[in-house]
Length: 364
Image 1: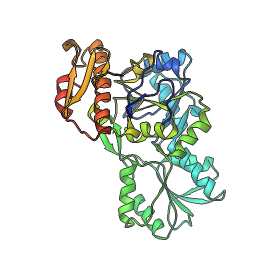
Image 2: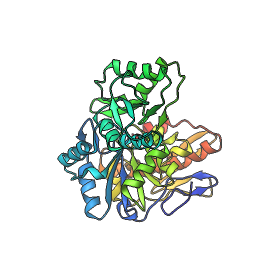
Image 3: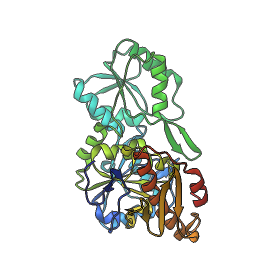
Image 4: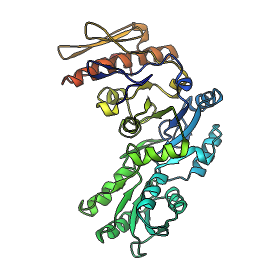
């Protein structure tokens, strides 16, 4: 990964969480925000999201919403965000449906019939690219495209995809997220439905995938936003953060969706974010740098983490443990950043220290 201002530094071959003397909303010109698990969950705004985005925009930061969820159209998503209190136009929403539709249109002639296994967002994106969505394998499609169709997607749609793929048609997929966050918890995502079709076809066909973290989604985002100093903001390591890594741009992980601190500490290099914050308020703050010391430890704020003889150690103010109060949460995030330095360094050296005891004591 290219090292830039704000990018996690390389120290002894280890990528550390990055630091920024400026609030991130001032250091970057455009926030490329995931939606599910970042801005809202199950349709309801996540705490602090609306106020944070309003403040960031009023300070000059551009906002663009980049989602792997192919179910809803940009118009619908924009209307929803506006209702939540974040005025948004359809042009500020980029979906994996748009990315996969562009991919198909570049490989198939205009007017091609495509078997649609998904929702309205995918249907609109196909038509935008001059493709004709059809409902049956018997409608003479030249390809199959699959995207998230919501929890009420009929089982018969997966069967229709299997029938078409058995005839040798190419298979396109908006994204392969196995899970999706909702109001009641984590549910199966489009990736789970893709596996259903894969099993039904005996695994004989591999889909072409457009969504995060793969290049077609990054290209779609760049084409539609024109961002020059973008910051990817997401809740998933395997899509948002890896997508930023693949695109060579900085990232902010927020802990309001799929990823928890334990998963963050176990992240492989391509899944390690530049910055980490409890929620979107991290956009509006400076981020302290994690500093490696001469004894092999890693400090951030008043916290220091190290691995000694395979054991993970954390030293810091007892008043900073827990996340109940705002100050406590901020101090706890400094501890998490220091822990990232220590655990990532150990992992790169072939060690896997147990993190459970320290995280239980920290209360995150």
